[in-house]
Length: 208
Image 1: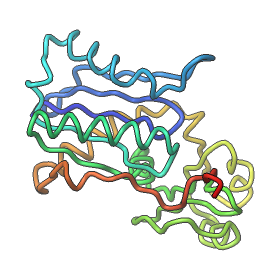
Image 2: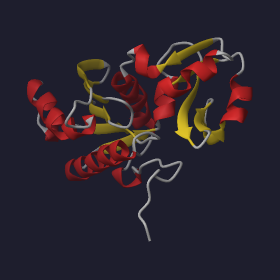
Image 3: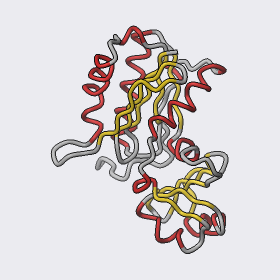
Image 4: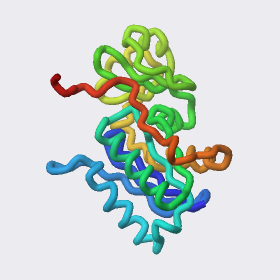
């Protein structure tokens, strides 16, 4: 299967093109002073396909990170994936960001990311939602933890091994594609079911 996987939900854009178990291209893009990283998504997809002598019609599946994460990044990721999958009539699968991070290391890790409002998005074998930090502290005591820069110092005092994914250099695009290539084999993966994962409302709301 020729699979395109991309992620603009976290701190970077990850784009992977693979054919079955072979990674053809893996790219990681960072934001610059003028544009957030998701601004490069469509142009980088087009460039990646061209570099591999492929057309969009050659793709058989699409995989994305559906969140939680940047609200702009989640919308960009989901919109591009739905449009492409519908136009190409191919499978599309969405994987939550915390599940992706939980598979970034071979050992067993719990994932907790800053959700603001004194909460953390928590994943411990399953997505547990936005949990009060005091409850997260109790659950994570003496556990291996993958977190972000905001919560790293807090969890460093209570965990066995604490990693900030923002410093670790994980190729999260590859991890996403690894999960997706197996899931597409056993699930329907209809693009109509591909929806953003918003656990909390956006931090800014329109005035009435």
